[in-house]
Amino acid sequence: MSKVKIANVRLSFPSIWKMAEYNGQTLNKYEATFLIAKDDPQAKVIQDAVKAAGLETLGKEWSKAKLCIIDGDSKDYDGYADHWALKASTKKRPLLIDRDKSVLAEEDDVLYAGCYVNASISIYAFSNNYGKFVMAQLNGIQFSKAGDSFGGDGGNAMDDFDDEGEATSPSAFDEPAPF
Image (cartoon, rainbow, N blue to C red):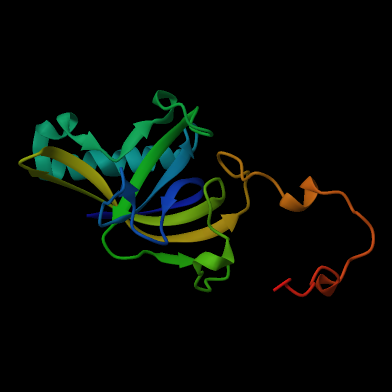
């Protein structure tokens, strides 16, 4: 297993606060996808780690394995064009921290699809009755900087309303029930 750190990559499809689901069924794992620009030197580091893990465990057959990294141009998702998409998962909740290494909670709203993060992953290969695989284990995610949210967040609801003047006390609407 080869541990790799990637820096300043976009976070996509994060299921990091609760286990991922597919068609209403839990997958019993946490997961996230990281978008790495094709011209980023980190992309080659990841590809080399995938190849090395595959060769070490699967031999020449590694080239037929299902890989944890795909060409983002093959997907029609926000931000995927001209990027590699690296999917990593883990059965135990990953470490989720802020820039200062303080632990994050979901209600902090810091980690979201579209923000930039640093991530620690481990690349490994295996085969079973379902096939051959070179996968990435998700060890942890650190917030790096804000980015445009993928899929839009609906904007700020406050911008949907005009200022209607003076506030009215809720008691002005409270009348006794006509019983």
